[in-house]
Length: 313
Image (cartoon, rainbow, N blue to C red):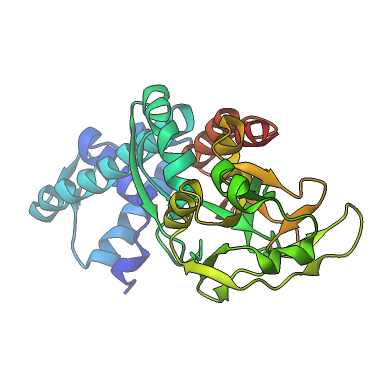
């Protein structure tokens, strides 16, 4: 006897049609097969269920009690398939349903969250779940459809769409510069009060170079370290010391004059490898419409180059 697990959706559809028409020939014409093939499908379904579904004679095909009972389940299963197809088809036409987004805390607060009202207005059928965390997120294991991340793009197990490269600036408040002056060289930084971000791997290294040359690490003695970038930024705005922060975090402050760029003739960074701001999503042949729509929306919202870089110029 065949196991019930061998029942195909096509067999259920044919059974439902036979139940409705009580005629193998009519169903055969609809399906483009022979009446004997329809009969064979019904026999195989009966064998799999261990129940007779129809009484057959020369004049009629009549459902048995088991047939009357089973048709409810067959209709429910085929109906669910039809509903799933409709919903999937709708998703190929308009983004809809739950979409889970993940972003670094401060980048998410500064640049992802402010664009959400426009995203919701453009795609009103989307339901958005946004998580902000600086922890590593594995697109294959963690429940996220689109992951905004900043770093080196090396992992080929997921797709990435880059919004742009991250650039760093040394900066301090005008008040700090008035009281303490500006460093005239990278070596001079050791004599200034520095505010250093401390991540999970320890305090950031301050790297500087002339364009086209090798990066050089210039050790500083921090007046303050913190794992909270906003706290360090507030301290810098208050005249406490110098920060080394990315353009997306302080570009607007440089443009407004609340911060002053230091050693602008040098490139600055915390990593020797280029750091990109990108949207990651699991590797798949057909990225869901929701994923494509969100990434395209943020590509447009951020601009090229990203708007925060023009603020930092």
